Image (cartoon, rainbow, N blue to C red):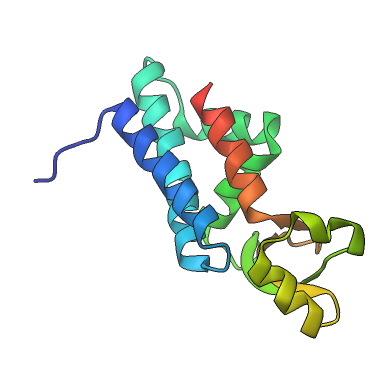
Length: 143
């Protein structure tokens, strides 16, 4: 039987997964691992903090109060009508070129000012940067 992580160990694992996803910005696999760990961390926090109660109500309340968690929960649920991870070309404004890594800058020069990014697409077509969402979810879950 596998040993259960403490809440602080799970948080450290989640932080490491978010950092790894940031270090590999085109890896859907690493982004999905961070999503899964954030989703599981919410359950772990519930188990540690809530005396009884309804985990589904707890998760619904978190999702209602924090959009990043709503997106994370939706991706982790793997519903066909839920949020999905996609890799797509994103236009980079010329004014933002100074903030690009050299690799992205070179790619953008040859691809009409676009670079590939892993993004979250919601059912209504809204797009979100997965790395920003994961960072915000991490801050929310760590509070």
